[in-house]
Image 1 (cartoon, rainbow, N blue to C red):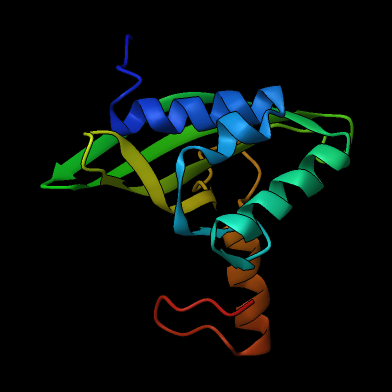
Image 2 (image 1 turned 45 degrees about the vertical axis):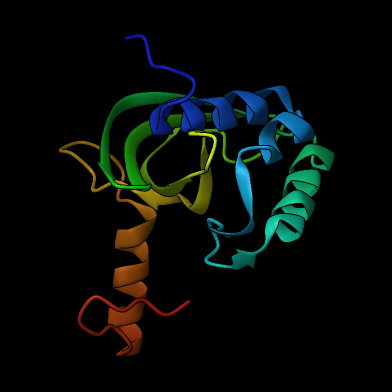
Length: 158
């Protein structure tokens, strides 16, 4: 499937490619200055500088990751786009050694020149497991919070 690099999905794919190449400039060029990102551990990074520091930490870790987009959905209204992807992520150079399956949710804003930039990056939402798959991180969190009596209608504490 050919995707225009100027489309919202094309921007998401460009970010993934830059991440795999460990290229900070190519990665960060796709983020607004006031973008926010939610890391896998639930920490929210506010601003491009915080996202840059997080990316530098990833590069310094020596780990690499490869993401295969299994399917995607893009919704565009006026100058706002939502891109949801289902992916398979593999790592080298450290844990986890098993592939991770998940979904990402990205919000992009169209700029005056017609390009798209990420304003909200939520890349690590674990998928609901299919028969025979390991439970997702979400299921593990649900179980842990139920045991602690902290789960409430759709709100997850970390």
